[in-house]
Image (cartoon, rainbow, N blue to C red; front, top):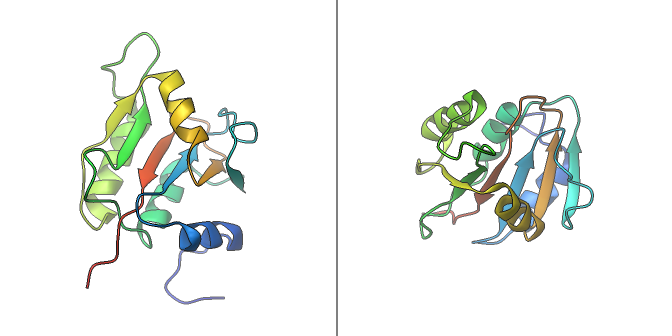
Length: 143
């Protein structure tokens, strides 16, 4: 056991977060997302919500302040301006937890899949709410 770490950060997830470098991305995805076939290493957090996962990750990983969009979600198909409840929750978590809060930007569904396929890792959660997917860009630890 380690102190001051959220217990849902599994050993494999902690390894991925530590191994990532500045500018690397990690995708947190819902239970419907094709995580295993997307390409990057898949870390499974079955039974854990995407919102709890986001909060835990942001408690140890800084967001990148050198990119315009360090947090991106998937647009609602057929209604790209819609903001699903879970995405609003993601924004609240970023505002409350991130080292430097940033506005969430969105990607069209297939563009999101493509971006996730280039992530360092994909974290498959047990999230059942639709559009419970977010890609984060890792920043630096500032003195």
